[in-house]
Image: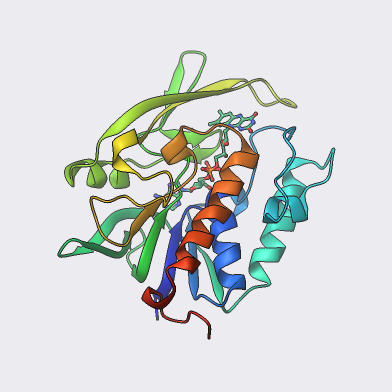
Length: 240
Ligand SMILES: Cc1cc2nc3c(=O)[nH]c(=O)nc-3n(C[C@H](O)[C@H](O)[C@H](O)COP(=O)(O)OP(=O)(O)OC[C@H]3O[C@@H](n4cnc5c(N)ncnc54)[C@H](O)[C@@H]3O)c2cc1C
């Protein structure tokens, strides 16, 4: 059944971290991401040290190639099955009942429902990637960004702020930049990661901060998990 205590959309640094901590604490977690090959994948080599207690710290080693960092994180997340169900799908719309977010619809067809929905979609909202004169809809090199979820959120009244990130040329890949949108500052609460416009809805990572450093996004993912765990009786499975 496609029903979870917490559904995390986006398995980047923030979403993976949140899902990992929640599943380790006994929650039934869905970690939905549009490309399993891009899970926990840095754009370039990681230079900022991970914060203690994070999944990032568990898998990081100085000089580790980005793809091995990704592989180590994926093994650890997969090892938490069945508490953590990691799967590939693209969220296109929220499922809303009354004033509450209760899940997402996927581009592939199925809907996924949860008590709490976390958007950790990074640099992919309204994203446009440019390499020289070429522009495409992508949130990172080789990773398409579809506008459906962004359009759905705008139609529900969410406000956004433009943001931009650039990557230098790296081992044969060209330098490029990504323009995207993050939630406007008054749409989300820094202490709780809530998006108060809808009950049960949270956002974390670059879709809120604009994407600063991997260590920061992963630490925020862990903080969000701790916040949700602290909500105690509101989450089924707490203490089970
Ligand atoms: C071009 C560029 C260069 C950067 N360079 C650096 C750097 O050198 N050092 C640094 O520390 N940081 C860098 N960053 C910032 C870095 O991306 C962020 O700090 C970090 O990756 C953000 O983590 P996140 O989890 O918020 O998002 P991401 O890592 O972007 O992860 C988001 C995930 O959500 C998934 N997703 C998106 N939309 C959907 C959807 N609708 N349905 C399902 N899944 C979805 C994506 O596939 C992606 O895997 C760079 C960013 C960009 C774009």
